[in-house]
Amino acid sequence: MQGLRYAIPRGFIGAEFIPEGNAQVAEVGDWSQLAAMLKFGRIDVAVLPQLMVESVFGPGVVNVFQKPAGVLPVSFYLSSDTDDDGLASRLTASVDKCSVDHPLGWEFGE
Image (tube, rainbow, N blue to C red; front, top):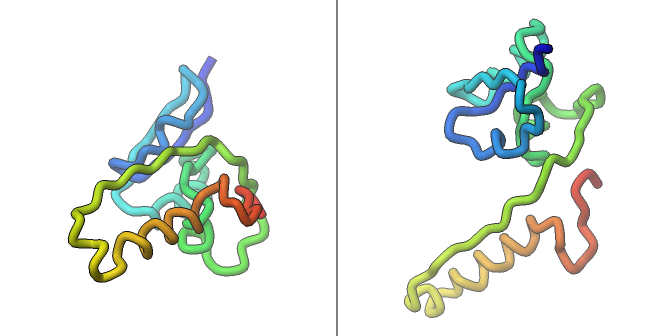
C-alpha cells in the first residue's frame, strides 16, 4: 500500500514529523513550490511551520487544513559580549514569544 505524498523544503527538519513509514517524501528548493505542488496534485501534504502558512499560500488563507505535527526544542549559545548590548535578552524574549509553551498562553493553532 502506498502512503501519502509529502513535500518539505530541502534541509528543513519537517521530515522528522512525517509519521508514515511508507510515505513518499519530495524535497523542494523553495518554500513557494509547496503551494503549487498541492494545487496540481503532485503531493498530498506540505509540511511547514504554522508561521509560514501565509507566506507560502498567500494572505487570508482559509482553505488550508492545519494539524500540529510536533515541537522542536531550541538551544542557542551566546558570547558574554552579548550581555553588553542587550542582544541576549532580546533573543531570549524572541524565543519565548515563539514558544508553544509560552507562559502567556499562546498555543499552536490559535
